[in-house]
Image (cartoon, rainbow, N blue to C red; front, side, top):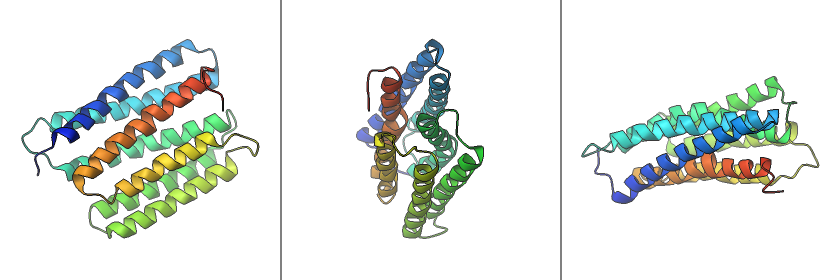
Length: 212
């Protein structure tokens, strides 16, 4: 148990507000658009940000106590990630290959993604060493990237979104090695980037504001 710093509290509240605000943005676009694929992507993005926003609402309730077990918060994140990361991966597949995504391929990607999360969780719980969790997690993540790249992204497609996704998610692995307070600050920032700001890029792309 520890006393939470003002900076950490601010990042938790800021993440909550951004995620819930983004939920409204994607919901409006899902209702507005006539493009079926865009509607699917926006519906998935709405689900991702809503789940994450509710989890951050729980975190902010926990922070109202005089002291907080930050490790317990980290453990709860894995429940959030086990739900939201498969949905984000589905968005990537739909972005690059609308209407032609293989259920078998998606299933393999999700299983490897869960393997990545499992390695991280076991390292957090001390079942395996932190470094083994780090290395094993990145091995599974590399497998996810290879399968996405080879099976789901057309050869002539612009790879900017794929590279952005890979860089953002890699950040989680390095933040994983920090102490509890700095780790939670890092995770808060990365959750906003990966679930809201990354989605805003897709929102602007589908809205014809951005071209890449």
